[in-house]
Image 1 (tube, rainbow, N blue to C red):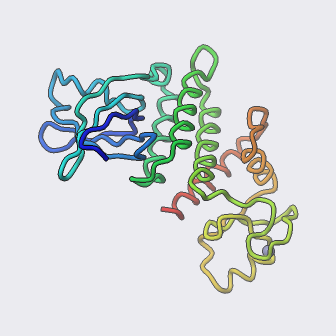
Image 2: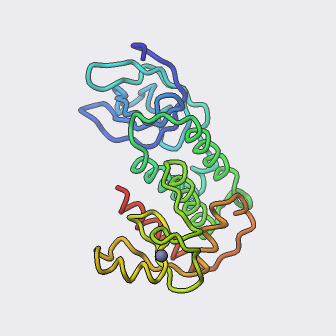
Length: 245
Ligand SMILES: [Zn+2]
């Protein structure tokens, strides 16, 4: 890397740093996730601060430092006003970026991941009648975001066969094993119980398996689902994240 380089960056979050600075976490197309110091960003009238708001896309000039790298200059490209003007969109965008920061390690550049994140934010920005997002749709979008993120990070769950015995999954009494990253048939669940702690294994309903198979494809726009299955999916995502990190 040169001592100074330009990059586009999605601002993930920021926190106060030293007396007047901020530490900003960003995701970039060519360098992956970076933590950058924005000098003086907490001072009134800071020229940098307005261009480093979380949930925005900016063009940055990054200056290599001995410890941390610095933001030399910043210019907003997309501030996602449609997200910031709707409380539900703002909440779900915040949750998505918070989980993204947990799951995506620093220093792993992935252009596809960047493009996908940018598209997801643009889609959320445009969602909803008259710009306001229904809470259940927001929950669904977040669940789907996490599911796609698992896949993009190489943790795509297997949903066709049992991850232990490789037999095709039949309806009834199946489990999701976070440790193996896929489904377990009832027989393998029973024998697995004898050798390992059950806390990595979550019961999963047939309808939830169906929903997840559809979600893994590209037909989610037409998905119909009940609040109960959505709750089950949210819980499963939470378990997977807890298990992974
Ligand atoms: Zn099995």
